[in-house]
Length: 318
Image (cartoon, rainbow, N blue to C red; front, side, top):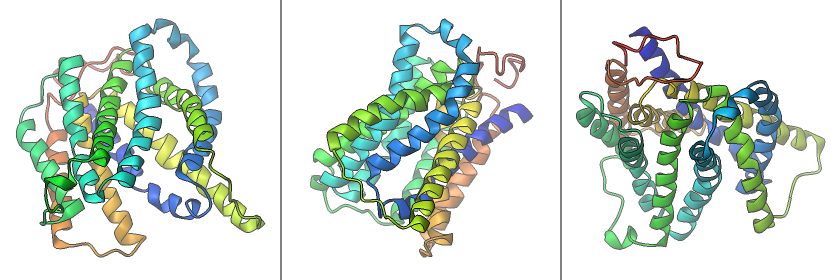
């Protein structure tokens, strides 16, 4: 029970760091484009994780082409392409429609986990999952329906948003597949290192001009923000996330990821001084209840085969 709770909450904490990203991005977006920010962050992450990958290089011998495909999926699809699709969705579609369709992400992860991993859902999941989805809806839109009609949903921007949701949901499942052979440090390192060539390609296509300030103080602030953004919502969050995912079902993990919008709400309130509505407080409470109850489920965890956790008893906590 203690090990199961521990690994579940690692995913919760890791995903919660993603909600803190806007704190570091606000200053950066004044001088850099999104592509430039993500590219520089991945260069920093590649430099930090390269020694980790070298220390674990012996694990790479066990990989087959299916594993390589999963690695490319999480690094190219789950990182670079999904972020690009989501941004394009905001550009070509209605923002509320894009945010609403983003709720498809955990559903995609659950379906893919069922097909690829043959996972069975934990007990009470059919109740807790909708409860958490209602909570995320309240966090985003309150008690109102944000759209005037289906015409705002059926458009090119919505297709981009759905594509991003499927890729992000699939990245959870692919990560779970890889953690059967690789340790969490190796998966994290490969995710960042393999994403770099794709990001370089995307940057070369975009040809964004650099508009960095010339003052030393401003450049220092940008460098500090880039470093913190790369190491906290980037490296630390993914290390915690993959450490927890190694012993949890993908369907359980995608529910734990809903801590992300909870942190976003807190950041908006504490840092950006945005008012928290009653509906958002209800949504926050519903997600918290769902996370707490699923963490108590004995069948929320899943056996894993890599050396990181092989010494953990296989039951009854699986």
